[in-house]
Image (cartoon, rainbow, N blue to C red; front, top):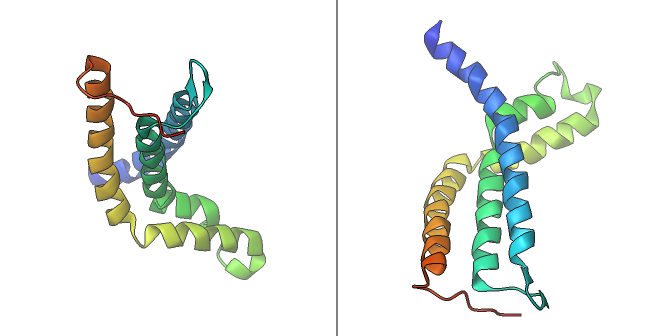
Length: 127
């Protein structure tokens, strides 16, 4: 039925979200390389925080909990799966907090990049 099919679609979007995190991580790596070598600017930190917050939200998803340890009827059968399930559960306890923080930070990161690209803000280099 209709409402339940959306839960199954949610599981498949998890894989897309992980791929998106990889793309954003590559962007952070590229932002750390300036024309004269490696460095860290305010924009690098803004983009890195963006990846951390989105990663906390993604890796705290209940779909990942199901993938990490939900296939087992008894956790004692696989201690490795139980540890993975426990790790994801730690993120899942604050799933809504991760959601709100990442929502606002994505907006700020987009605004920061846009204003730097327009020349309104300058990306200060720290290192």
